[in-house]
Image (cartoon, rainbow, N blue to C red; front, side, top):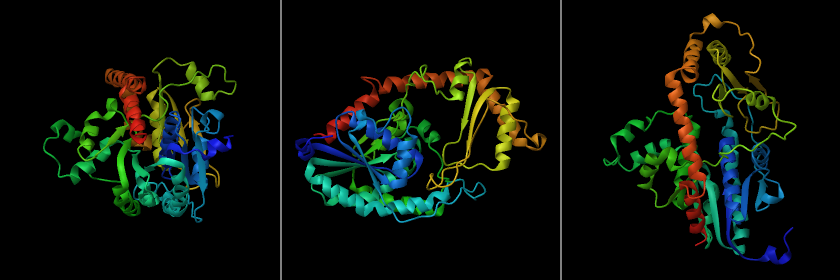
Length: 390
């Protein structure tokens, strides 16, 4: 525990992190909090009671409550009660619209966040807020503080973001044609509600002093160059997840899937996972199962319900398929399964697939070099820390 002198000492800089209440967003900013705290900078991670608990319970590779991570302080703030419906795989769009009530409830964090910022302001020369770009309205009161600065965090790919900003600035002709062919179309799977939510939050980007991206030049250099045309300051500090796997040979409670993987040949197993917000229909599940089984390739498939707004209410079904292959019905009725089978075979048992896996390995090596001492990501981190300590 800190001494009285340490508790009252004016800090050089304090960082407040405000994530959006969805797993991919919570996780990225929790990892970023750890990285920033490694520079001996106090970090305050601020979210709802439910989502702070979710972030801490699901993080991998480190313990956010260990003594070595005591530079991170968690704030669990109350919001009004909200509905937490089950996901519906039959909705018109595949966006997880069942999470919208939790998104809307998170906007009520503005008042308690403003109170926290006001309390922290006298204790530091500079209060830096790093907020998910979807939480701009929550941190807007930072503008009233004489020593406050905000930085917008973008958890999605710069490949996607570059399209929208490129359009806004009038599609500058100097962008290379090859880049233009890679920029996605404007088609979207988002609901009307989340589009309106996003647009409202984007109105508050005027408070941002710069942009932070969970990517690196090894992955998305051309699109970072596009964004540099519209950002006064930006930092590419990804990937935030660990790129090295810790040795678990002495772990007596190692997961059975990992034990099984240790006994397989390199590059012989495919992992199938659709994340925490995707909800599949029974027909899609059957098609995937038949295609994977028919491919004759070893695989691990993580099949789970999509997250609810509050993951701690009710049961979450998780089924891992791959170690024991089940017999699936209606295999002759599903044309989609043949497409899946061919795709898996192409990836795992063809010359083209071998080339794809080779490129993936090369990209992985480039990413590891990026986060190592002297790499692009490490330099971007150092530059950002130097900037907020200036």
